[in-house]
Length: 398
Image 1: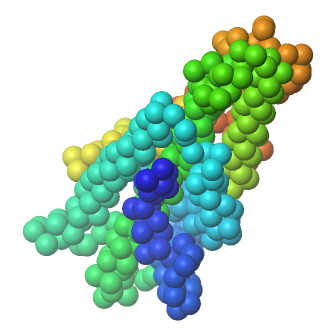
Image 2: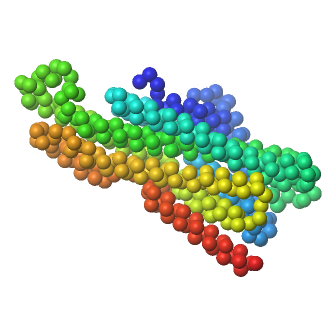
Image 3: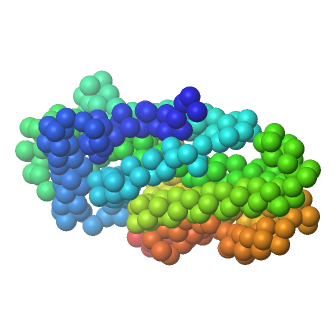
């Protein structure tokens, strides 16, 4: 192929390098930049946020606003640590995409890969636009109110209640810009890691679709080399060996796709568990915050933020279901070929392959839940249950 499959990750990789989580093939000084960047805008950011809760007033309304960003910070921290600790595995994942067995040999296969690459680029742009809109709507509101109406400058992310009010007033601008820049970087971490995870799931689906086509056409005479088509008329044994060889290639291809999905699970299992748990809490909190008085710009922020959280868990669950469905369809696709006239060896290999595909491929988060639409439904139900609980607590306080 003239173009690599991983070309669609070029923007992601540029951001990874800038954000200090992708040290591959760069100058040795990059590790110092990476450590400093992460320490300043990820680790210290989370530590200060955590300390803030110790001094925060014990009021439900106050905690709700703080927890939206704190849960996001926890989710982002898990993703950053995943990239730092699993760098070699992620590099292996990219190398597998460029391996010979993952390269399509037909026009249909090339189109499938091209469509996946186009979708990944488009999805990145959509998530970037929505995320940036939500981000700037929230962070610029207190600054504009301060500059225009001369009201007190409110910190956009956390109150930093452990800092005395007099000191906070003196360093209001540095604190504001630190929180703003830090949240901006966290946003780009989320965009470029979430879109990457979704993209590799789509590549897994595309490989299953290509394998489906190969299995359906495995006994097609039009697929034989010219010399084999001539020999097939006079040499049945050689013809059967050819078909067995093509079936073996399909079995090897399926094995590699299975390893690919297993590697995805090994890399992102813990992160998925944290992200899905946190997303449920964030959706619940955002729904509850809608019931409280707030300016219009804050409602815009809540709407876009809730949309992003729902998308972050819905699409992985949707594509997780697609992986299971596509892998199960292989057991049906193989019977679309002319298998009844084939040799006993071919039928034996075919039967073993079908038995294997009867257990569909899947991706499990935290060794607890499968990425599927049923999981998404359960998460949304949990979020709504927590929401009703918060509403009940609010009514009791009132």
